[in-house]
Image (tube, rainbow, N blue to C red; front, side, top):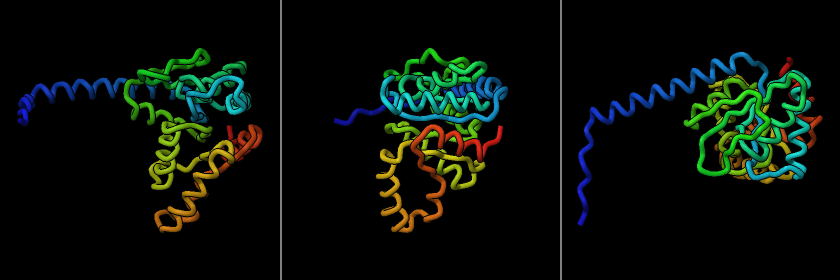
Length: 220
């Protein structure tokens, strides 16, 4: 027997949604007020499951350190793994700005100790606004579903001209080459994507190459 659902009271639901809007606005205002003081941000993404000693972790530390030395603000998701590596590299530089955009999650996401500018978010989409709004470049290290989400969201925004173009760097060609081949062999061949739109991505394999590339396009 199918149970009947209780009738929601429209006014009560509207009140709950209204209060949620105030919480969302508060997170946006807090983010704008805090990050507005910093410029030339580089957002770094990658797996939360990578640990110190992994070559990708260590190279991310080096990339972030070199970026901070060059005057860029380093922005990560504030958690462990690649996020920790990015914050660590920036924090090692005197006056380096190491931003963590923390999200409340039941697993994996524990704030790392290397943030000297930290924000806390409940809403994923507000956090994503901060990553994009204050970024002049994206560095996408090897990662999982969350990393792919950030990568393709930024790419679509650039593709559709909703934001100004900026460098989107895929770090470690051995990791990303298969995905790029699939996009070329299937999406482009089927006419779902233009060949020249692959130029939105740049694959690189060394910290110096990444930093040099960003310096060419984003002058501090």
